[in-house]
Length: 326
Image 1 (cartoon, rainbow, N blue to C red):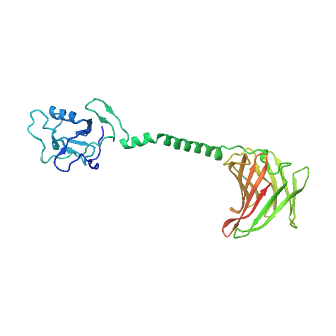
Image 2 (image 1 turned 120 degrees about the vertical axis):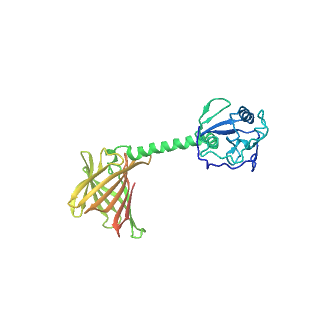
Image 3 (image 1 turned 90 degrees about the vertical axis):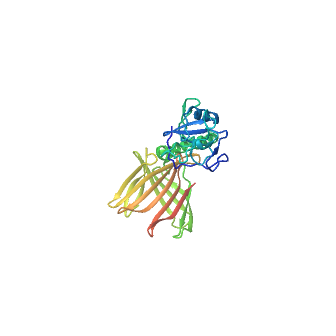
């Protein structure tokens, strides 16, 4: 049984007559018995209740299309059908109960005709919508679940870093292009480097057709780290570019000198060239402030394929260089 506030109203239908009498036509009826809603009932069942005295003229009744709950005595022909009835017993000042049952479909209803209870958690119109669109709802729900699973895999459960992600694996690096940018973001210069010499150790020498564009990269594997040699703020150090075994979301740090620290974050693992690709952010900090960042893409079995350098300028990090490796 459902109890709702008496302020609940339904838009009047074609079978509702404004006035003191309501024409009884074929419909499902409900009547209030205390704080309970009884129904649905046919016209004939409603008349039988009136004839037996179970339904009184002062009891409130309702059916679809009526604006509000109405005293049973105002339903035309209802009490005329009761034996011994001499007229419509409609008290002139019948009052609605302080709290009337809800309209049909808002909760469990008791059927006087069949003697059982049924539970309706949603209004009939919502039940119909759910039935019509159940496959769409199931599809959307399944898609959301799949997206959550993929997000967990890509961000928190991707492959661990291995030596296969080494950015300068033997035989994989032949040339790369650096693009330099102006302060306004426009392209300043593009320089193409090629490998001119590589010894048996960890040194790689690169040169370009542009004068004075020669530099050396030194990388090595030490324990669970792929390290490279840098000079930061006048300090020389081998720092861990890759921390083997780290998964997406993992971080590691290295202190170069007092006040100078480098922090790496394995942001995510994506697909690049049909293979797993680790996206790693490197942040170079001085006195607790990020002064420079490198965002690098490492493809498993290939190495470094792309890098973006940003430098603190005017209170924000601005893109100054990109590198694309072939």
